[in-house]
Every structure is written in structure tokens, then in C-alpha cells.
Length: 136
Image 1 (cartoon, rainbow, N blue to C red):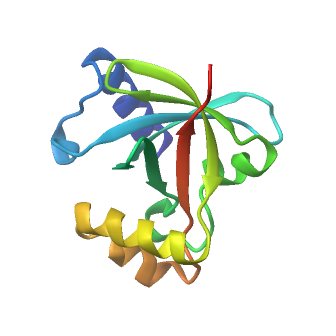
Image 2 (cartoon, rainbow, N blue to C red):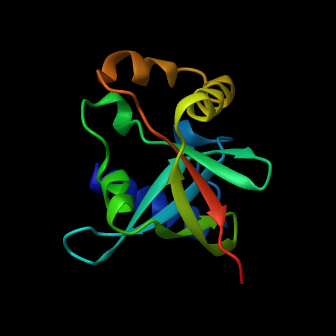
């Protein structure tokens, strides 16, 4: 998976924020977190939906029973970097809870058919994460 992610990241950056193959036409961003144990920058390509000025990502880990590493990193450091298109900005990542999580989940799956299958097989409540641009 790391090799695939590396390839998608390279393509994303070379093409100004677009990728091809099975990801053609899907809104994608690059999320850079700080490793909880290593302190190293970790970049992950993710599908997203816009919710007003905020961007929302789905911590599905492709429906695996555990949260993705990038989500666990947010507990240690919620300050992230987002690359969308040719734009790069600092943001604060906050997991949505309760009714807000349910609203964002419905929004995400309505725009990304098939992702509801991730929730069905995960055996955990998959977090929805709001990325809000940092002031300044």
C-alpha cells in the first residue's frame, strides 16, 4: 500500500492535484500528519468532500478493523498540512462526533458510492474528520 500511495502522491503533485486510473475524477487531497511516535511528516492521499469551507475525510482504512495510521497521528498532533489541487495550507483536523458525524458520513457516501461498504465490514465506527483551514 505504501508503494501505491507513493505513486499516487507523485502523480498528484506532478499533475497539479489530479490523478488517473481508478481515481480519475475523484476529489483527492494529500494530508500530511506528524507521526505520533516518530515525529516524522507522513503524507497520505485521501478522497474528500467539501462541507462549506471545511474539507471532510473518511478514516476508513479501506474497511479494515483498525483506524489508519494517519488518524492515530491526529490524536498526538491535530495540526496538519493539506494539499488540494495546486494549493497547500495548514489546517486543524477534528473528528466529528454524534449527529455531525452522521451528517458528514451521509454526505461523504452520497458523493463516493461504494464507500458505505467500508463501514459495513470495518466492525468499528469509522471516523469522519473535518479539516478546517488554520487562521493566518
